[in-house]
Image 1 (cartoon, rainbow, N blue to C red):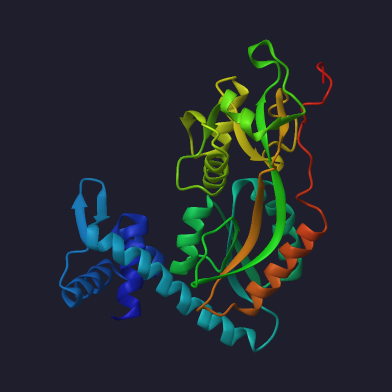
Image 2: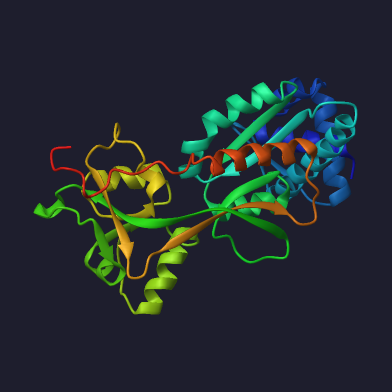
Length: 312
């Protein structure tokens, strides 16, 4: 399999057009089409389908797309490692973060990264743990910050943070103020809006409540955290999230948080790397930047707690 053929195929799928892919690759359209066709002949599979809007991958093409992105990423890393031997780290590093962590970390991290590594570039992807774990193994991410990832020999984890979970609700919902804390057994009394499985926090909640025999009332399943919080803010239910999910009052001033106790629900944040893929100098240095920020307390922003005054 030729790398040029693979790159042409990946770019055609990403742009949905042979013409736009050719412009990006600085090749002629017939050359790009020929490279993709040669790849199809070698693999003995049709990889693309044409429709009125351009091209889309077949089932075989979708599988090759995920692997192909990972392969091209690894080639880029190899080149970057050789270049790094000649001086300061350069190239690109791509890190994955949960939305709640990205909200607290990304802006300052990008600013410091640009000052520290002017010859390099940083990509930040925000997604849920399940998706980022798969992308890490496929090579689309250099490393990722994950909540409670699965035990695996394919990844190496370093715990960098732990935080308790809270019941998040709208102030005065149903005519009742939010308590300052809520026992885990009492969660059965609250209609919950949670991400669907698989999800790190949802799995932790399900396992611990099942262990205590607490029947949960799942009112809605919403994977997008911002949409989930919007629904909670409208009084359509409650969420179980970390305190960083609502660490600011400007957008949702009516939200309150009750600490889940007896027992507490604690989620673990780790830096995950692929066990069979060495990190570049740039990736190692970026991890060090993130760890310093976390150790400096950037994730310690407090939520709007239930104990706030009623008119706050």
